[in-house]
Length: 319
Image 1 (cartoon, one colour):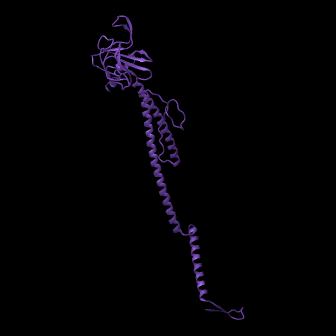
Image 2 (cartoon, helix red, strand yellow; image 1 turned 90 degrees about the vertical axis):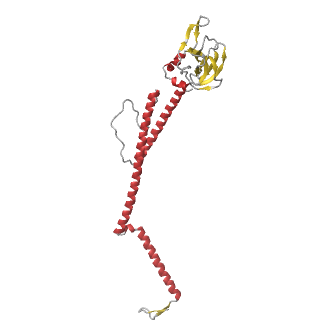
Image 3 (cartoon, helix red, strand yellow; image 1 turned 90 degrees about the horizontal axis):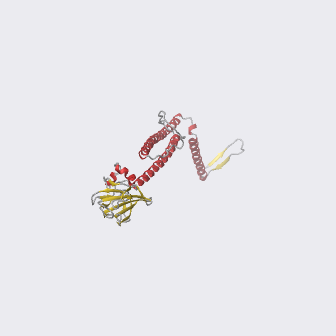
């Protein structure tokens, strides 16, 4: 292809010869410029689309964003409301736990320091005032603070009730180890503790226990839980059972016709351990019952007073 250039400035005409290679190169360059222009246009459009005065596009994007924001707020609000409801339920449970702790304290007589909120000031004397409930709508920060307070309250109540449980268990163990159950349920003592005239010699002598009259073969039960340390014949006591209740407290059951336990046996309160007889130094069928602390005879009547009043008779039936 030949191109002839003619101009007033040129003395002669010039001829330019274009080969096929030149044509192809020109077309490729033109295509590249078109692609570059399209890329630049797309980039500028995406980066500055909000600045383009296109009301329809702007309104569409604003509507989409507003709907997403509204859905997000609804989800957050629903979650906060659900957590607030749970928070109220847990606070109500804490109130019920406090009420239960107070009732247990009244029933058992165990007085423990009442737990209080970590951020609440110390209070003495009477308290009261109108009920002001928490607002229905809680912010995330308020809810987080309430949850922290609730967690501290739960820890305090757990410690409080844990101490109450320990005290109750200690009290239960202590009572189970005290000889407060009648060794012969429903029996009345015929000869009490203290000085009396000896039935064999007629002389004044100390009676270190309590005698319960009963027929031969009547059940003898343990006055408290413990470990049998003696189950053998004794010249004075006859067939004798001796139970160690801990803390140097021991009970003796003498003159039995038959022994039903052996040394080392662990017995429960009200468990049958022997039968009434008249063995050893005895004038007739009866049970000689002793309570000893640190080896010294104690008046069993002080321990059996509760049983005589009927408070511990139920325990004797658990044999």
